[in-house]
Length: 160
Image (cartoon, rainbow, N blue to C red; front, side, top):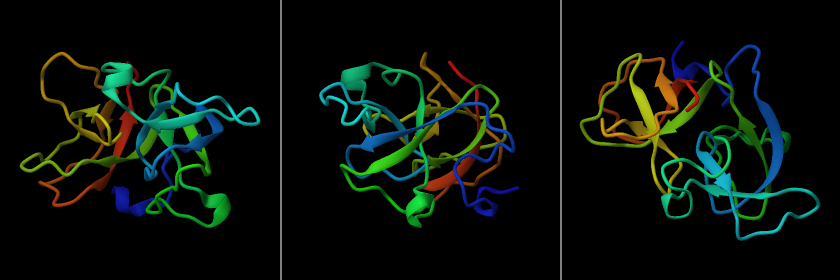
């Protein structure tokens, strides 16, 4: 199935990861990688999460990979971005879980099944690996020609 055939971020028939509620910082869209925001105290037991940022986290997000989900409890879809300060849903995948992830628009970067993806700094989007030593937590499950815009891509979480 192509990514366009799904309307949810977690596409595994039996996901094995963990779902949580969190306060969203910024305006990320579902399918992006978030990390714990160290500058904000929890509110009513909910921690704040921001997009992956190398300046605070290095090449890996702080804590486990957290994928922002669609806000289906409020009638939102996978194309609706969040607003800072709202309560959102996160998913911490386990290896083998299949997801739709937002892939950055990178000129000349088509992809094939089995390609590895890294997490782009300050956007939380995934993009093709550059080949240097880096964390590649996602493996592509579909083929794309050079996309002309940010695109949902079907991937498998490989872990670290």
